[in-house]
Amino acid sequence: QITLKESGPTLVKPTQTLTLTCTFSGFSLSTTGVGVGWIRQPPGKALEWLAFIYWDDDKRYSPSLKSRITISKDTSKNQVILTMTNMDPVDTATYYCAHGRITRMIIEAFDIWGQGTMVTVSS
Amino acid sequence: DIQMTQSPSSVSASVGDRVTITCRASQDIRSWLAWYQQKPGEAPKLLIYTASSLQSGVPSRFSGSGSGTDFTLTINSLQPEDFATYYCQQANTFPFTFGPGTKVDIK
Image 1 (cartoon, each protein chain N blue to C red):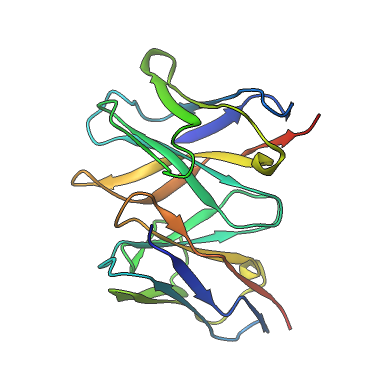
Image 2: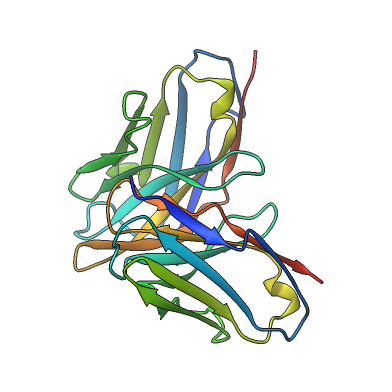
């Protein structure tokens, strides 16, 4: 059974750097054909894809946030980490990590999601 | 980026109704489309992938169709647990993009 859980601060100040950790079980990010993504959702708004990391450490980022975000993995700890610099109140959102459903090396969807973690950016 | 639109933005329906939600992509995404259901305070749940494939464990009253730029999610015989917001997402090209959502509420 695949599970994912996000953790990190609930409150950050403007200009600070946010670090979120996704701890997962039921799969390994060292296995070929596996990947994890980050998606966020501001209160009352739609979902926004942020980043994705593959088993081979290939990474993809949202162009609008590419200069501010970094995704990485710690295979030994079964974790994926997202850092976002220069946080702003508009970055207030629930942040989700999700397992990528990958078939023949193609991401088809996000099939298992974490519960999400709400991050508020305020001074 | 590929822009995703959904219509309607909201729909009021009764238990037992058939509900159809449309999603349109700004360019050809072949069949790389997913549908998610989200209830208040919960994470999204995958319903449909590759436009028409039913995710394991999802009731068969949910179905998806379409290819290219126009897609449809149909809920046959709406159940009380189906009142939620539904999002489409294109997986054809990075950056992945989601539609704005369609809220299905009780009539």
